[in-house]
Image (cartoon, rainbow, N blue to C red):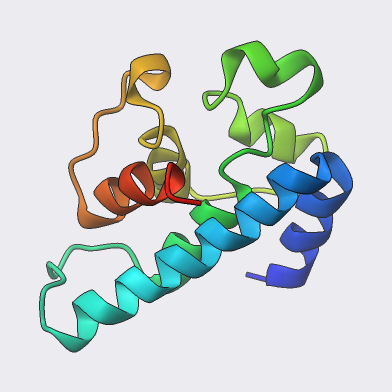
Length: 121
């Protein structure tokens, strides 16, 4: 993953305040992952740290234009318009930050982390 490409896409796509919120959530996701790893609290099937941080960075990329009313279910489509792709696991993390709209309830620690940290940032 080339983080800089995704960061540039987020910066160019989102309003400044939402861009900064996305950077903050990326940092939170990385910090939560590190804490859980240091304390041996990550499940063996948990997604890698890069998936956690990428999900935090791009979680609102579809909160603009034609996709805004469908947020967060159009992340992949919004990224495809920018010639970027994410894995299904990253998409599931992103969708779980708004389960009332995506119908993806948080199950994994990554999903619970983005659900909880989104409102804090």
